[in-house]
Image (tube, rainbow, N blue to C red):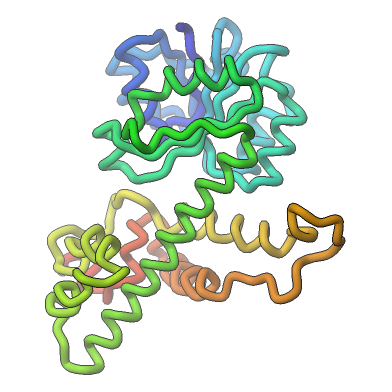
Length: 298
């Protein structure tokens, strides 16, 4: 298949590399030097998004967020009528509905994971569209990205977006929990290594295992798997989604649900924003767990 792949940042590049094994790819990125790995692997590089799409049988986007999707795809009416559009960008449920209304061939395909699982082809992947035939086609297309047990077909881009936001909420809040567990451990004279070990039998075991190498100094946060900027952007989407929710799905009540808020996520976002303000936005989000010397390996 001839595929136009728009957005070749860290995650987009890994996804596109899997597809190059079986498909003909033309890639585009706003910053052209980020297409170099794919060009070396055999992809064609387009000078503009429109040029990339011109001869494509399917378009995939992997952009930073919904505003980038609007600018690149929606505003210029980039997708020809009927051409399948697979969007891996993390967006809100409302964004997904907007994009599907503008382009009926829209398929929301957010991926759950970071660079390691992306390289291994073991990501969680949602495939959301009401078109059953298109859903089946896209599930087959993106299978090289996914752990087979975590490839989930759903009936709308909105549902796919909800699934991705839930996954990243769990990640952000558990990272904040680990930050506070380490602080509690330090206050009681418990070393970071002891704290990580004690957390092995708790609900924080997963995040402690994932981020333990950063806490131990085995890895630095520079060039990390999932940046503070990226997860903070996703957290803001979640907070905005709750703030903008009108009534329960099963009711006709107007207005936000009383008390609707995400206080634990707001705590995580505050930690992330402090690191971003300190110049660590492009570091792995493990930066919220570390002191400066630990962060840089000094």
